[in-house]
Image 1 (tube, rainbow, N blue to C red):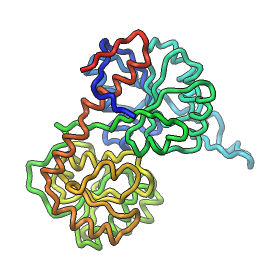
Image 2 (cartoon, rainbow, N blue to C red):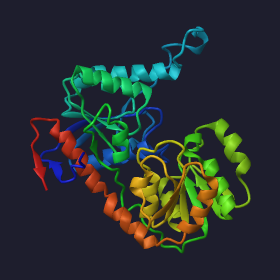
Image 3 (cartoon, one colour):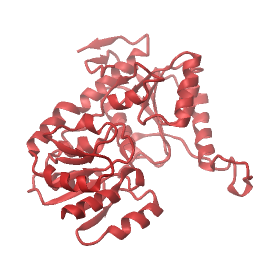
Image 4 (cartoon, rainbow, N blue to C red):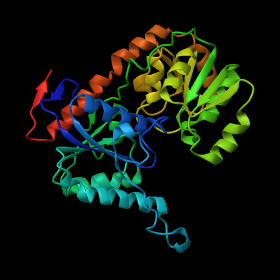
Length: 371
């Protein structure tokens, strides 16, 4: 495995970029993939490449997306039968990607950069003239496993992922998956000028897999005020597990743009990260440390790759009592060490150069320069 961080394309590429289409690519971002897609599109363009982003039609105007709409008229809910098992949304996404991929060879791209999390692009890649690089942003799941396995039977595919941990989870199907760690804008994610306060912060999608209710319970057990930010995408989860826990020292700030998150992170004493699934990376960790804020986290997925003893305290997953103790211990860590660790690990330029190398390597007519 390699991060290929020392190579760049010697001439600009014409890149078609796929992402998932459930949420617009705009602030405030629904999650890490939306932020990744926005930053990657903008940075590749700044480095001279032409990028056509296929995305939700309500994405940010500056991205100038090629809109992919979910046409939900393929099967009305009122016409469903007892034997139907696929949701209308599933069918709509399937056809949206099919419509896109059937025409993509006519766009004249040098390469397709697939960040969609969907099985259709992988399934189509073997019959396309245009080479495709697929980034595995998630651990294996049913539809993607089957698509990758079928593609191997037809003759391979080109893949990379965001952490060694996630590469290991795909090793049975992709034994030599390249690893390019996520990068962040270290000029944007930076320590606050204001004095640090004595509260904790948690942010992300407010869903059960992210465990914000456990962060609340741990903060209360530690006697620490907690501010929560993020999109309440699961209304029933929010009403049952989050809303009743709010009040007193637990405050919900809403769904914040990144500029506000930087300020909140930089002033917090500690950032809580509470995954209840195997996080393939953990962008919140990188962003918190870049702001000089130490982390108290459940040890799941790639989180152990990101934290050191100087920058965070990890505890077993779902252990609220241990997390409460970690909150108190983590707030005493050196904030300067947190910032230095982020600077050493998560350069945006290093990430972009890694992807440039892999993308240009799929195009025989593009030479690659080694810096």
